[in-house]
Image (cartoon, rainbow, N blue to C red; front, side):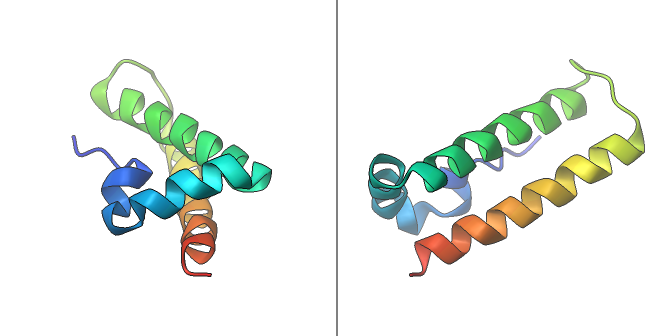
Length: 76
């Protein structure tokens, strides 16, 4: 199962991600929440956690929305 953490998703923005985590409280919370959901999805996909399809779909949609918001921060 492929990981979708932000450093793998946006390797070209590694330095900016680090800078924003330090300087922007909202970005830091968004970053932390993204990783929490990404790890939860990974655990579900690996069978460590159980969830119905609707819940998984909602998590993935939320992750995608958060990724878009993060991307907008990275391109400012």
